[in-house]
Length: 405
Image (cartoon, rainbow, N blue to C red; front, top):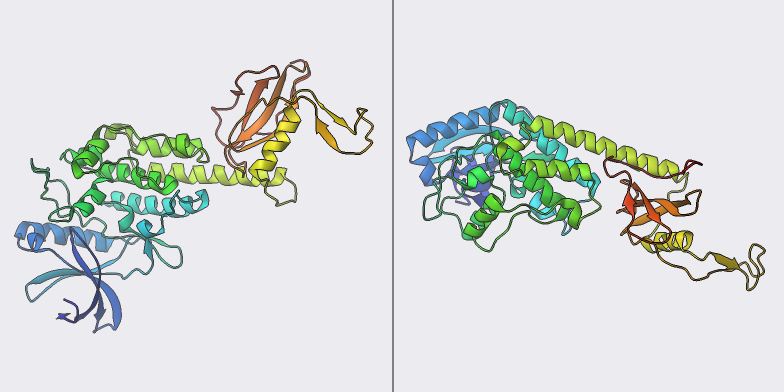
């Protein structure tokens, strides 16, 4: 269709495709502006009922006024071809931007919060996306997040025994596209059950999981195996493979991924509020850690931190010089019969002996930034360390002993 003209829209180039149709860069010759033009597939256009439903949904989306939802301009027909015109968003999709090991936490929050806020706004208008995935989320050159094709995919029809679907999202698509969509389906959607807004919340959980780790929580070699994984498999906790991720983010993501929709967040607004709180806690922890470091902005490398802690809690003490303790002769310290007591991955800092000399308390964090630290205690004569603040989110550090302990 490149080079053709539909009504007063000149089609310049193809910029995307999917189950809902092909997307073109077009020029609106009346308003002299570039737009995105999506041509609907014949399967949708030939059904009067589906055309009417599509127009109702498109009008509902066009009525939304949210900075993170693509704007629909019009639903039109020319020369027997049905199409919609939309805002042209410049940038890259999350699929293109996603790093191999996931986004750093600051970038995760910058994308996740407006993404969930947009979904919450649509849900308040009784609109469910039903096809949320990284390929439908665009980040423009200014960092603005925009959800594409919002509400235009309708996936309530059940899968038949051949694994096909009447859903425009997956109808007549290549196997890779089908599998890519299936990775983000909710269990009820994968089973062909009727979906509601909580299906979007599950999809948001999948997207958050992938944004944080670079990995999808559900996998398989075929569409059938992906469906089975979505329906049956429990994803690995985020902190198990990526201990840098705060526990409150792990909990929120896993709540979104509950198989039973009643166990998920019941509204995207609640999820957004928890993400905002999590961001504030994380930011406060960073500021507290920075303040505790004084004016220095130097970051401790893992080898330096581990070496410092090994010296601080190694048994046997050290001697200064070659003969005497306390009065340095060469001012070069050396360890005498050290024994390692801890082996936490990440930062271990601020060790302090108990008054009776039998235990050592210290702060440990899985990240060099020391933003989600916990207080641990280890026996001086050996044994596994015990986390004393596992139930408290945020920064716990700089332990001290009461004289009578």
